[in-house]
Image (cartoon, rainbow, N blue to C red; front, side, top):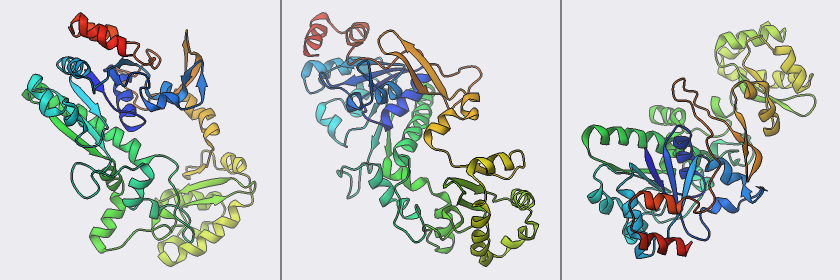
Length: 381
């Protein structure tokens, strides 16, 4: 599969990174001179930014000025050889550039265009610029995050961005499959706002079914339940308790020598009292002591690790989720591994993220662009 990736920063590049990890040919189409903004994000190693190294591994880079006529024609030539165009511009930009789906589909009817947008292609916010915090705020996610009596909390990961990237990847695979069977491509619109809305099936079920509005601290997902909560330990660290099923809760009660609490949570109004008792109990040991004490007891109690601890965890190592790579120019560096473990077609780290435009000449000549156009485009880099 050949993908022309016009996207920048996080959602689009993360989507195309996953596809590249599993064998897709991803060609980043970048602006000469600057390229993807993430290239300039620190920290750096031998001139390569780690953000860029992580998100753009296994890809090629072609520098084309899409605002120039020679650049536009070069893109159209490339698009005739591609299966997918991935982009994250505001609606209407590609049409103004003359490289939109309508134009390209006349040259390549099987082409799939996937746009990752902020708010979609219609509605009052369609032209509004925003970031993840805005999408998850408007979708209601932020209002459900944080302490019950405190201010809303910013989620620790970019929830709309990351999930939109995954949705885009799944949509691309479905659309390419359809194009293979029917000969007809299509347009895909993955809105970050729409993605955020779909991340809350539990809250949606409560609201549509009963009118209940989920907020922080008023339902089982946000801290209302004693058996699905976070507790501080003696050393100021934390453990998470996720004993939603009765068997796990029973195991925990037995381990804590509090069998009297086993049936206490059958009554909703007991959760607050039990939560206070658990808070006092977990304060009696350190996080590591609780981890050791509850090991093998099947309680769904886990330590709340910091990121460096998570990267060094035995389970992380066992799952090969931290890769060590070596490149002649970058040197030795580390990467997050492949979440999807596939027996026949495993993910691979084949090449480092490209320098800006390092594949321009080879890719353009390979698609049959005439020599004068290639020379003009190389001169603009």
